[in-house]
Figure 1 (spheres, helix red, strand yellow):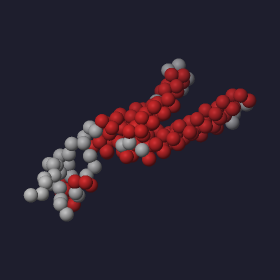
Figure 2: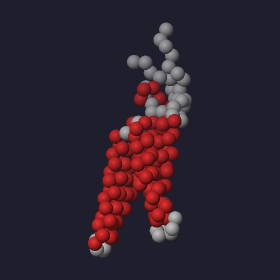
Figure 3: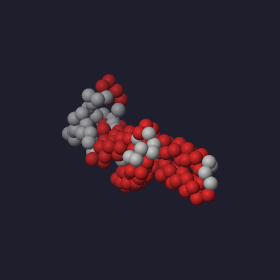
Figure 4: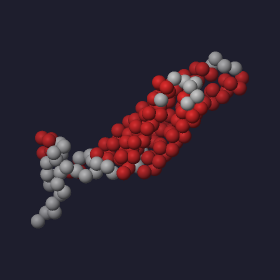
Length: 159
């Protein structure tokens, strides 16, 4: 079995890891981005539960619309987490665009209609959009391939 040349980033563990087992920086960025999308989903599951609880205090059409909003938050959260687990984790192009657009569509109206008019406090109101922005930035780094160059030298062809 051909071993790769030692990587400065791996230090003493380089003797035990082949080049195929090293994960490039772009893949790490995509996976950390996927984790932030999952955190976004968990945060929005809690928001959906809160809105559903608020709906219980209302009557008629107001109650129905709050329940509808809670369901939409639940659906966005579950979809975003599923895309993160099954696509963003693998640095998939479709997953990148799906979560970028889908979750942006979920958060932008909240910022425009709730946060900007001051109907909710900036914190924790900005938590969801910040989680989305961090996840989007990291998955963008992953998609652009920043960090794909390895510190180890390229594999030499056998003589």
